[in-house]
Length: 409
Image 1 (cartoon, rainbow, N blue to C red):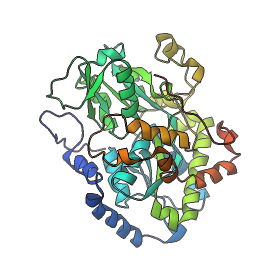
Image 2 (cartoon, rainbow, N blue to C red):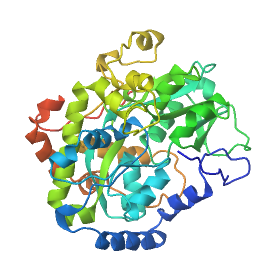
Image 3 (tube, rainbow, N blue to C red):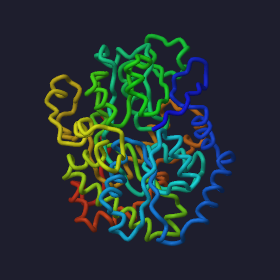
Image 4 (cartoon, rainbow, N blue to C red):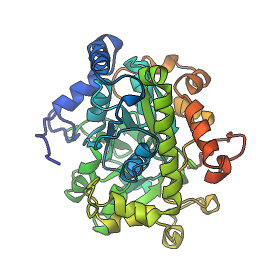
């Protein structure tokens, strides 16, 4: 990947976001500004194939959250569903992937679950969640001289996006430990009980930690594992040990494609569900497929790093050190199940309404959690796809596809 020039938005800022990226996100902040992008997306859609002949055009970041999309492509599961699939397009930031999706350059993406709300309700772009991509799979990683959460006081920590579960969980962890959140760039004065948050592209986080420009980051794998294997940092807490089996990224489709090409949407979802089922039993093969040693070159990551995330991990050392608090949850570092629980969406809305976010958040506080759970998510396709592969039990899910959210810091 070619790294674009860094353009700070404020004096001394180390946010890792270029001015172009910032404008992309800002353009998605209000319906009036986003309107030209919406029309552009409609125009591009009109030029494309009609009906189920539309090719699958995947947009992704090089993180394990994209696993189902990449496995479905690599194992030709889309073709098995009668679809054509183009080579997936790799992006380096969430701002870029959102812009590409809205403008119609890609039509199947994985996106941070809270970011879907910003796109649908903030920018008013009609799109829906059709499945989860994975559960857990993120961590708070810190410099080696940080031994407890309170050591982050007076320091800077990176998040991948304001609208992310990472931001939500980090702020909950900090608040529990008597720390408050600020956003002051690099030159701002940070109090001893404050933690300065900056947005940084996931691919830049390990190098930023190594250069000591940040004291830690919270992000999806495999960047936490990369920091561990290179000796740059250490995991302080796994996200799944705070919010049990939480979603991070979800599969996002435009409402236009869902309504005009329902069979296409079903086939896309079928492939993603089958990819997740295969991944659960073939972790090492999945790591190989995603690694830089595979012919697809989906990610720049080494097999060793991906294996640390995807294969069954011995948590004895993490448990002994106290990094894993809830031993009885019996979780994998990352796992895969596609069903989007309504209880999670409702809790996500409530959580976002309480934490610090940047930009225009006026739309957020008008949202009703129960309404969002029904409006943001379309679970028709994933229900049918799960039934076709053996039902909820195939993924270890309750038969009624209902659960209660468990958050314990």
